[in-house]
Amino acid sequence: MREKTVSEAIHFRRSVRVYDPEKPIDSKLVKTCIEQARLAPTSSNLQLWEFYHIQSEALLKQIAQVCYNQPAAKTAQELVIPVVRLDLWEERIQANVDFIKAANKGMDEKKIKGALDYYQKIIPQLYRGTKKIIGFLHSIKSNWDGRKKVTYREVKAGDLRVVGHKSTALAAQNFMVSMAAFGYDTCPMEGFDSVRLKALLNLPKKAEISMVIGCGIRAKEGLYGERFRIPFEEVYFSL
Image (cartoon, rainbow, N blue to C red; front, side):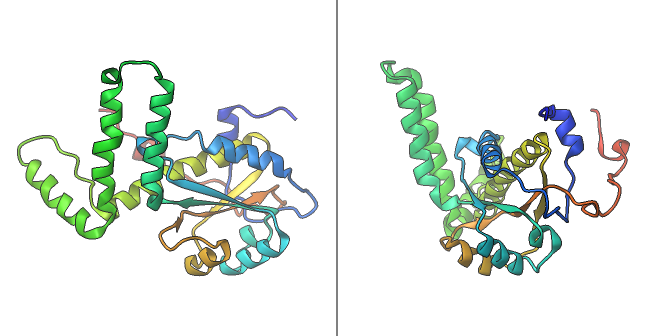
């Protein structure tokens, strides 16, 4: 089967809620799509995400139960669960620092000072704001500074949480479009018991589940209707 173009994959992708049990999918291809998910843009290249590829039949049933047994989970051949890991910011900063130094080995450190300062000074200062009190103090300072100059204001713990989920959602979209390119279907779900699901995945307390993505090949009844979108002229503004 010919792999679809980007435009073809985007148009093919639908939120499929019932999958055909007689049409298995290739787990290796699903894994390939997860690898492509990692190529999505991510804030400051921190990649504060993890991806859980669920193939175990027993675990699939357990996860379906904490997803209210909705058909997109109950009939899924496999599940992919993107997880936000803001708590790994120090490790991911160090990974970027190590990469910059290795990629510029032998270069005068003054020439890469700006990049290193960004990861060793600016970003650590920002992500210390994941602690609510520090984030609140950061917001007071940014609002004060913003009275006189252009200032970055999304510095509170809740703001950084949004940033983490945005980056992870971009990766999830990469995954779903990649799946569509292979003719595979997906459905992103937000209806789940996050506490029970985190326990099933043995996730640490600070990890947050972005969504649960059902994977398979659509059954005839898999689409619940025609695609609906708000008219383009109502959402498009050319300035």
